[in-house]
Image 1 (cartoon, rainbow, N blue to C red):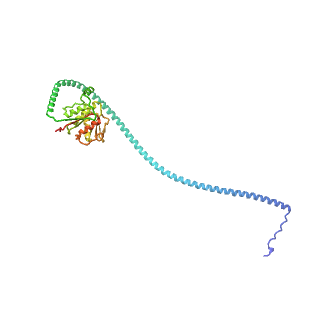
Image 2 (tube, rainbow, N blue to C red):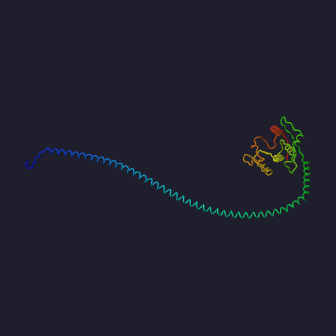
Image 3 (cartoon, helix red, strand yellow):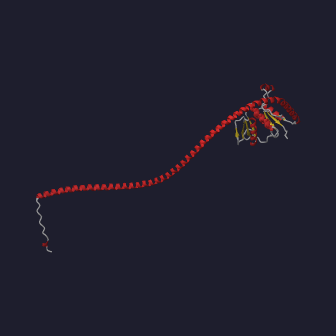
Length: 349
């Protein structure tokens, strides 16, 4: 290819000085615009970075919100399960409440019926009381007539009773003459004891009514023991089983109750204490019992107890004490007054 085939480049026109000034001015303007554009571009870049940071924060917040939403959804599921269980429990409680209400209604009906029955019973009782009062009035009238008849009968039987008592006394005298046995009476005095004179004793004390009367003639040892008790002195009775020692104890209890004193009756075993409690309860009524296993009316005027309870006087042996004289000596020393020792070898058949 030949060089003449290409178009020929025209020669540039010469730049004049005034054009150079204009061109320099234009260049400055372009530089200013370029600077402003750069500033705007930097501002846009900064805003873009801020938007990216904000978008990143929003994305994190969205992720956190999604997590919270999922957690709340899980909690909602748990609450739904709990609500279902609570609903079931409430339903069960409602059914139980209905049963209780039904039971209350039944009890209310029963109570109403009971009140009606009570009113009927009260009316029946009132009718019975009226009948009893009428019967009591009739009985009182009949009793008045019978009292008059009884007084007449007593007057008629007085003479017969006198004759019977006289015959009984004579029979007792004859019986006492047939049965005779010895009775030993000894006295233990404390050391240095001075016996009071008979005149002083008779002046200071007045005769008392017997604390108890027995429907039979007392044996000699019983009479002497009771006489010692009435003289306010201690007494020790030694006799065989079934000889009648309990008679002396009965009189001592009656005498203590007569004089407003308390008395204690001891026995070696619980069974015997229970037996004596029943006997004394029928005789004196104001009787208590203390055996360790059972305590009845401990403030009674007469107390029956075992020797185990009454530990201030412990000894071994049966009701007939072989060393009774030594025991009487000890009682006299402790009480600082005479202790009478009444002994009999009489053995009942």
